[in-house]
Amino acid sequence: MRPSTGRRARRVWFFDLDDTLHEASHAIFAAIDSRMTDFVQRHLELTREQADQLRHDYWRRYGATMLGLVRHHDVDPHRFLRETHDFRVEELMRIERGLARMVARLPGRKVLLSNAPGAYAAQVLRRLGLHRHIRVRYPIERLRLHGRFRPKPSIAMLRAVLAREGLAGRANAGRAVLVDDSAVNLKSARAAGFATVLRIRPVARRALAGGAYVDARVRTVRQLARRLG
Image (cartoon, rainbow, N blue to C red; front, side, top):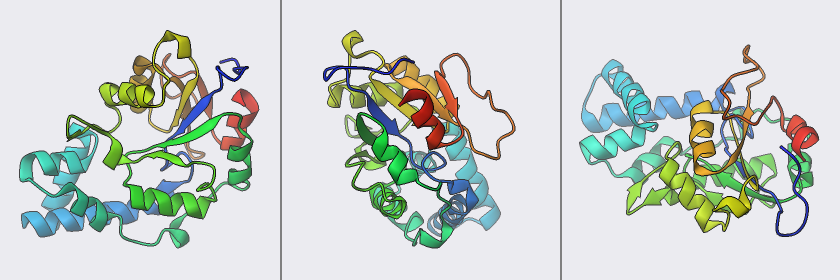
């Protein structure tokens, strides 16, 4: 990927949130998973083992537990998001040193594109010191088409995001860059028209995860700035 030059060719960075801008696998995912299992167990009157299994099944099948609960059990998605992400993130977060400064130095606009709910994302971005640098945000509440949720890795939704940001079409090829820890999301993003960067977790053993649809691989945001900024 070559750095873009000129005002019209200014790059736009789309950042995933969890396990991309911070290490959610350190503690936050465990907190969210536990609350999701609690929610499923309580609202569907299942054993905890059954609730945990159903949560996993819906996540694998639809890419988000919430989608399965909405489709098959008529669960209020906003209530689900609120109850499963209603906790303080500060003590659970692991943050790369100098992250806000490095993101700020990247030339171009910065946009959040995450399957996380908006209130939770805002809390995390503030703790990361990125709330002033990432003002345009697409949390899961905004990832909807024709009234239905279409979170990543929906290709149709990713194309719609590009259109909303004025980045659709061949004339804008390479301007939109999605930085994400999910190879599945990046595969769809490439099909939709994004350039792609795989954020590999520091503990990952496979440095070459993902296929030809991945333009670059980084372990830290610092590497992103050095290689593509």
